[in-house]
Image 1 (cartoon, helix red, strand yellow):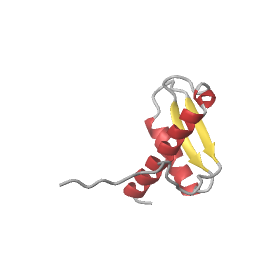
Image 2: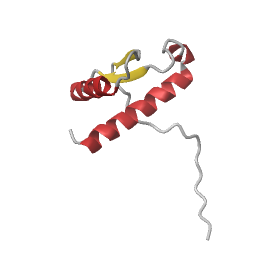
Image 3: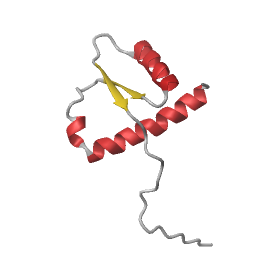
Image 4: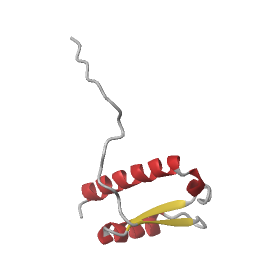
Length: 89
């Protein structure tokens, strides 16, 4: 996996996690302040391994680590409602 692929996968996964937390604030309450959150998608073992390696390398001394296991990410879909495009000169 290239660095660009790793970045892109984690960007998408972290965006989805942020959206999930907005809809499920009770989950956010379980995460300690200043914790290192490690997103681990079960459907992508290579990404799991890389994220665990990154977490190990970037963890601050004494920092709490939170592993967030994700069974899968649903196919992408837009959340926009009735968008309109208006082109102006």
